[in-house]
Length: 159
Image (tube, rainbow, N blue to C red; front, side):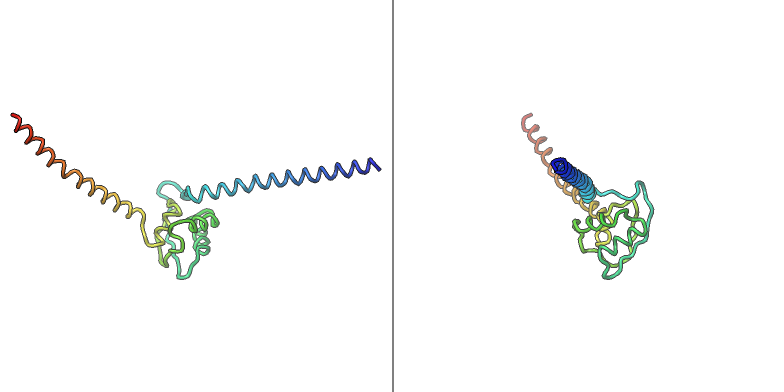
């Protein structure tokens, strides 16, 4: 009887150890998947590098992020539909996609594509910001010649 108890105890311990090993492996695997998704949500990359391939993409009235993701994956603009849905959910353009036909490229990040589909072009906004920065730089440079004139007057007073 003690041999039977020993065998059952050994079997019980083996099952518990196997269960713990399986749970640890699952946690390890899905932790990596979760990390990869989190990383790619905020560190977006384009499908292709360089100039990419230009694609005409149409968004219809009432298209949800799921439908848009399915269609974009179908034409090769994105590689992972679930990742794109998460990127759309966490972007500043969430729910702002407008119906229309857009010229998108495989060299664009999902955020850039969302910006275009929301009706705003990030690149043109960036150019406007740079233009306004250069205007403000010019304004700061204008008082400088007046200071030079004052410096020149002081020198002539001392002569």
